[in-house]
Image 1 (tube, protein in one colour):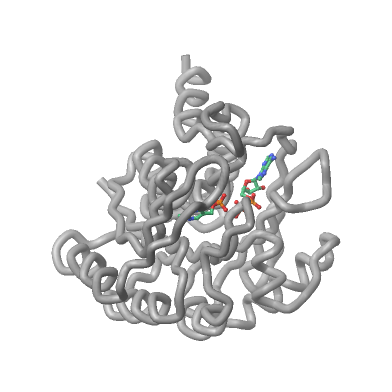
Image 2: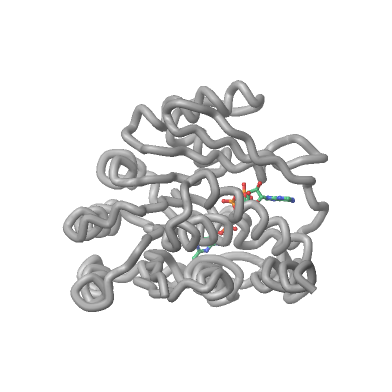
Length: 269
Ligand SMILES: Nc1ncnc2c1ncn2[C@@H]1O[C@H](COP(=O)(O)OP(=O)(O)O)[C@@H](O)[C@H]1O
Ligand SMILES: Cc1ncc(COP(=O)(O)O)c(N)n1
């Protein structure tokens, strides 16, 4: 069985972070492992508390996996501080983990900060150059490039700049796009642009969409898929998960991580 490791924050509400990643790995038949960078007290209404782990505790979790089990792919999510980013980058380099997906998580949907402002330098300097794929949403791509992104052309310009930072492939996600009918993700690998477009689903239940998308992409890379094919599957996975979103809590509910498998099983009958 192929293996994937997520290095990210815990979401007590179960829709985003480590919980979303592990559910997604399981659904895509990859053995999931985790190194927790921070514990958040979170539900569908927002983030109520953030408790970062020490860099030592994070390093030890990663080493426990690196020294014994190993992994076929790694993703990072919420990393919170420069110290954590530096520690994680050093471990990824040490184990030569090349299938690295960096989801540069910065702000939760409700507005809470999941990355300190000063950590953006460390993210760009130490972590992004190690990444095979980075998956910023539009506001994150704006912070990383200093550009304002409104049009499809702006997205392309931002992708070009992000590849200049040393990343192999950039996927700028379109969830925050102004387009009301579609959600388009843009892939750029330093040579070609590809777009992945699906119908925009009108729903408030989008908690954890970014985490789930990047976890699906990581699981597919762990199984040996090309980046293009992994993005294609991740896009299908998130579309099904949003379509079948779960009504729990009083705010932004989670997506349904089981929907993609259910849809495939129905299609195969
Ligand atoms: N309402 C929606 N309908 C269809 N796809 C969506 C919707 N919202 C987000 N997506 C898709 O979900 C994935 C995550 O995107 P996004 O919401 O931008 O990430 P984040 O959670 O990091 O802000 C992308 O593939 C995006 O196109
Ligand atoms: C612990 C943690 N990590 C990440 C997110 C971002 O979630 P989203 O996928 O909705 O951007 C979150 N809300 N909580």
